Length: 600
Image (cartoon, rainbow, N blue to C red; front, side, top):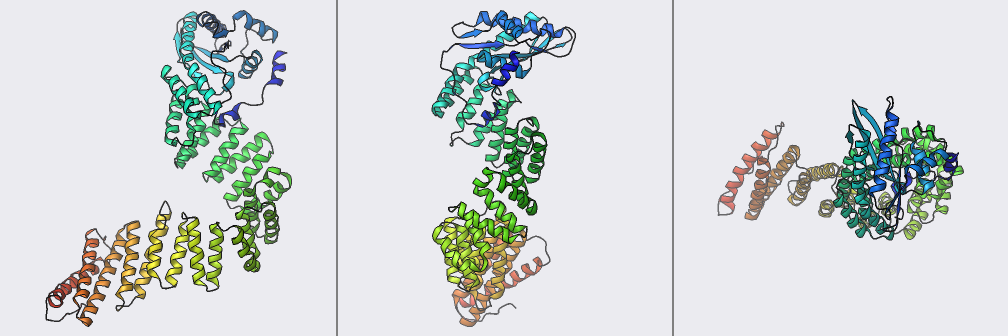
């Protein structure tokens, strides 16, 4: 039969094309298009299928008379019936989607009108779509038609098809511009098509492709995708674009929900399902990704791409034994796995973490030879070398001088051997090459504090990145180091106390809370007291003035609120006593005569 012959010729799938940034080459402008109006389907009901076919016959006849033949050749009822008879199609049966696509491909049809008819009482309700064989999954839904007769329904559907076709000239120009790489022209043509037909879905799909130019913001792509989905909630191209836009905007929860929705709706597509699972792994959802990958293996069989997804999920879940076993199998059986150094990094780590150090070292040596330019693998190799690191590390630094992890490894080795200056230099070089990792700044600050250079540590910490979870990391570290330095400083060392106070002020500036403000208030009172002690010893007005400055700082912090902790009353009492003593000292030491009594 014709349908079986056509099935051999049909491409395996057009869905992967949805994930490309540009559609296939569009037809040349003004080239005649062939339109196929397929027999409409019918919901259950006696005699409804015959009415559905009467509606589609009427649509076909009307479009054949309304559309200029030089632009569109509408396949007539007679020609369509001849094709269906040749294909052993029975008039009282419904043509499926796959049969529609096969017939359209054989006829080289450009545009296809599909429809479904149902009856509500005495009213015919028609849901129709305008599709194109070039992008089957990007279809134009037409407004729902309601009519009392099949002829009236056919007339309305034909009118909606004519209105929807108004977008096609701009759409073809958009596609041609995409094929030439002119994304700006493509976007202009798509926008023109949307202005001509505001309900345009296919033209908006082309606009989405044009806006993926590397400069358009993800928020703009999200807006267009939402516009498409408001018109057609089943548009796969817009669903994928929406998920990618949410991911780019760091709206992880929304992105995960959108990808999961895609997986549920398109579980029968291996290509799209793999794309979804990869996205879930990027979004740190390894448990869901693993469950989906296992379900896909049950549905599609033991395919290499699905085994690789399971391997990545095991790695993220830190299920090292499972990852190591699967990695050993993929290393032998899967050329794609062997050719990707990222998989090698995960495989070596899984072997090491599962306790098989010898296998990890063997695989690490093999990986370094296979990918001599991959710094990550060389770093793993160094970590596995152990006692041989003294020889291998300088070699790695010479080969990969710009890899911050190697610099940090060199800094740790120098710190272990007591060479603090080299450790400071190497940590600084690591920060110069990658300033985004907070831990590098904290490590450098530690080295400066150990070397009694608190001022340098303070400067480093002021430049430490603070985003997301890094905020709490930086705040807790600086607060702890400030208190540590303050406790170590004696009353006779106000300069070190002031450095400690600056660290505490930095911690409070990162994220001001009641407990950090109370700490700053108490520390400023301690520094003020140290200056008063110096004033008693030196009789210098400048020491009293510095105490007064510290008290002013303490007053500002107290005014911002210290909460209701047990030591708040003590801080307030200490401030009042220190304020009285400092006022007396200002009168005596800065205006002549008298003595200073320092509060205990």
